[in-house]
Image 1 (cartoon, helix red, strand yellow):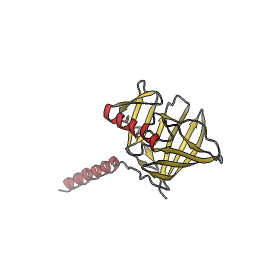
Image 2 (tube, one colour):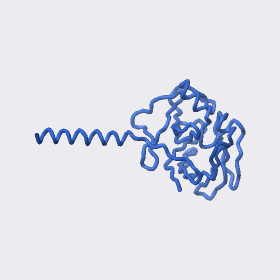
Image 3 (tube, one colour):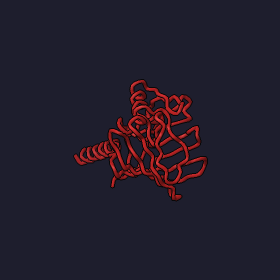
Amino acid sequence: MKYFTLILALFFGVFFTQAQQAVKIKPELKTGTIIEYELDAQGQTLPMFLKIVSIGEDGIVFEYDLTNGMAGKFINSKLNLEKGNSLNWDQPVPGEERKLADNQTIAMLSRTFLKELLLNKKSTYDGIELTLKDQPKGSEFLAGGKEVDVIYAESGDGSTRYWILNNADFPILMKIEGNPTGINLICKDIKNQ
């Protein structure tokens, strides 16, 4: 009986541990949320903080702060969120309020792209056809030490890989590897104030 109880306890311990590990968080995005990124631009690594100062049906506005003292705003309008098909990779200018061309987004992908990717298993962004795939083992996305619910897509040859927050309204780019522009990024944490 002791062995049966011990085996049962071990089974439930392993079961509950695996069940806890399988829970992925969906960070709440609201005014005051801070997204901490690490940018790798042609071998130079620097942190970037995006604070949501406005979020809603009409779009999302980020205040950005690079630790080198550069700060400003990035504005993703409703049109950007709906119709964007490329990311804006232009270098920030201190104090700017960057309003994007209608086909561009910053730090996120468009809702149309995400819908198409989920529906057709393929979609194009930044001129790269991306295919929806299961995340490779060992590449689960963590931010702030917690696994985040993301959608994973990669280019046909696997050289460019996107991890996108699984949020139909605000598909934040959580990580990009192999970006042809030479600028890669990874979200290190998402915090609400």
